[in-house]
Amino acid sequence: MTKNELIFCPLGGSGQIGGNMNLYAYGNEQSQKWIIIDTGVSFADDSVPGIDLIYPDPGFIIDKKDDLLGIVLTHAHEDHIGAISHIWPDLKCNIYATPFTSVLIQEKFREKKIDISRNLKIIKLNGKIKLGPFDIEFVNLTHSILEPNGLCIKTPAGTVLHTGDWKIDSNPLIGDKINEKKLKEIGNNKVLAMICDSTNIFNPGRAGSELDVRDSLLKIMSLKSKRIIITSFASNVARMESVFYCAEKISREVSLVGRSMNRIFKAARQCGYLKNVKDPIDPRDAKKIPREKIVYLCTGSQGEPMGAMKRIIKGIHPDVFIEKGDSIIFSSKIIPGNEKKLYSLHNDIVRQDIDLVTEETDFVHVSGHPNREDLKDMYNWVKPDSIIPVHGEHRHMNEHIKFAKEMQIPHALRIEDGDIVRISPGNNPQVIDKAPSGKMYLDGNIAVGENSKSIKERRNLSLNGYLEITLILSNSGKLTKPVISYRGIPENSIDEKIVFEMEDEIFNTCRTFSMKNRNQEKNLIETVKQTCRKIIRDKTGKKPFTNINIARL
Image (tube, helix red, strand yellow):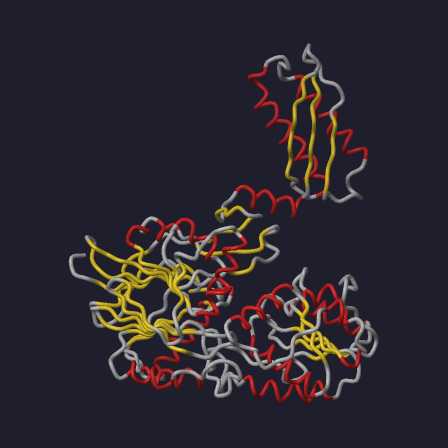
């Protein structure tokens, strides 16, 4: 590579929804500069017990950190900023974000006791920055959070538009409308490629407006005569503002419940938003207000185990409770993968004779991502030479490419995490190489790889249980009765006969070893382990995680 090239490389978010992390580079082998767009997380499921957060493996860009010019953030959703405090210590570069995103970033670093003030650069809305060969202009869009930005990235090779997450909301309620004028100006000056959100590509029509949700919520809430509890995504400040608006219209107070809800409210106020809403009531004080005069706005819209909504429904929240005749409104989407736990929660609500309102029964939510009509407008404004779909599973990105062809975009390229794409020079983007990519799992407060021993062991424990055997040896090497304990193995199968059988096999095995010879301990342990696991497997069908200890008296 002797000529200067413009490179794009996703490390996360292409082939999945969540965990977004994208790289751009310009230059040649002798001099190549990089930037990172977003550093997000995704959330773990039951297949990785004990893991909460997953984020892209940053190893590829850490190896190039001397040529890294900075991290640029499009907006403050966790799938775009959630990994920042975990990844940044290995990079030590500047971070660029608009004010609301910056407030939430500062809090993340404060929690890890890192002073980020010198490296966090706050960019005004629709502002510009120059990072080496990259001239980057923030373009105001609309989404389900404050201050979402597209990034117009200009280089000597040409211009790329990185949309981030967006939709077209003609009435966003809070924040500016989408900067249609700027997007048209960008389109009039030739765009080599648009790297674009694919989340709602299967949805016809438009994503809808927050104003429409507000009007519908007001109608629904005005018909409720008892306590109203609403749960929504805490980051959706427009929805939060709508709840305050509707509560005031029906002469009710609002109480915010949940750490994230209060954190977002304070961040929005700090950045000049929500100035015209009444102060929320502390949940401890809200208990004194008649149930027909209060609205609770809670976290936990996806049935999170520690979310406020789950604790309220289970009757274990210290300040909020529900009674027959109350109403619970899920003003949110059921995210794919969360159906089982949410339907279980919905059933718990109905059993208690609580009125349940969800997106399946009423109009209480609009998405923050573009439907097909929104995408048509964006394509017509930007007129890119090529489209590279991101922010979606493979089926979303494949459908997005079909849509791009319908829109007569000259070139479209389906990619996945780790693909190194040459945008320029050339007539159309091409995958020219593969970067190392993968996932990091936050195990407690330690980041581990996908093949981590701790994850494998915990998965095995969750599936097969635990068996522990302690061999107690005297100074002469004589074995006393082994101590056998187990957890998570079917009780109706583990009886005294199996324990006796294991004891007999342990004694028989130990007779074949010189118990005084410490050099044979490793082989002894492995043999006892395999023998006892086989007995459990034959009797129960389980293959327990097995630990053998030798104690010499």
